[in-house]
Picture 1 (tube, rainbow, N blue to C red):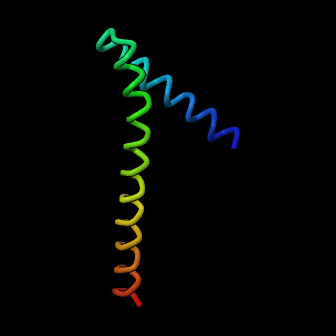
Picture 2: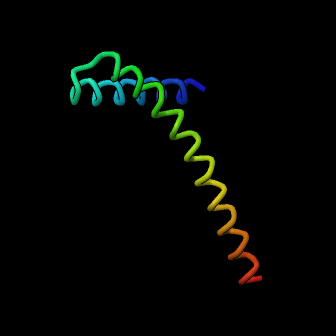
Length: 63
């Protein structure tokens, strides 16, 4: 759990820093730092679903 929490903090800091450096906006940096991980979580869910489907197809073809 500690590893997950520290990675989330690093992710937040990187997203904030990159956005702030590109825009100079603290507000935009904060918004991106909060929204981007949420969007990534949703994308990861669908990515996993797609790979599950691929795995099932391969199992049917070889089985």
